[in-house]
Length: 295
Ligand SMILES: C[S@@+](CC[C@H](N)C(=O)[O-])C[C@H]1O[C@@H](n2cnc3c(N)ncnc32)[C@H](O)[C@@H]1O
Image (tube, rainbow, N blue to C red; front, side, top):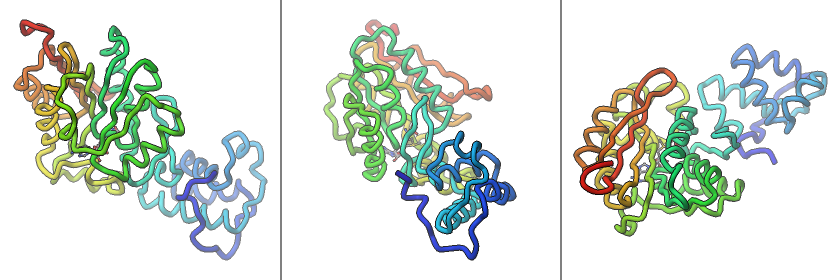
């Protein structure tokens, strides 16, 4: 089934003669891979079929769809919103403008989370600010013995996460609409609380950047200094961690020290950060002491 986002928006005067000539036209304004993926979405064809039959004709409605999508991509709209899909941790997720497009660096957060859970049988995990469900669903797929709580304040985002949960058949994920864990039991039940919250400061010009300006503002910024979510998480998450449980977050490239200080002030121990592929510290974890102040 083709995604909503690839519906026709009006008919052009003439169709492209072939898929090959459509691709050639598109490459004047968008890159080669984007052009191919958009044409695949329009034709409902996979890469192999597109490459094998470049001489296949395009209908008028397909031409109209393709021209419209290429124009939107050239204007900076993320490819994932146009095709309605994004890859994350080896799986395809449904995405829409209601959710952040999951980023490759967040896959490193999932990898670290899995390492923290290595010696923890049947873990209970919360993913706060789940968006498309990317982190929770990846963890649930890798750890079928885990129980996941995926929380978001946006009902529209949760509707996307629900589609992904159904599509991937991850019945070990529970979805919840809340501001972090504010309405949730205060019992210390979680082995891991993980989050990729909004962390861009309100006045940061990146909010107007290519692609980013199409994403939901509430997924990007706290409308303050970029640290509000971490303050809330330190307050709300730490009491709900079991002894020895971890609080793990993604953050901006210049926020590691501030987040680590918040974690220590909240009583967490063994606080450490990890770098992304560009060498910037982009994730920080801290542990609720097992007892006697030792992690
Ligand atoms: C940066 S996006 C991360 C989405 C997804 N976890 C990912 O990594 O692709 C942050 C998410 O936090 C959600 N959010 C913002 N404020 C929140 C709050 N107070 N409580 C729960 N979720 C919140 C946003 O709606 C958004 O989906």
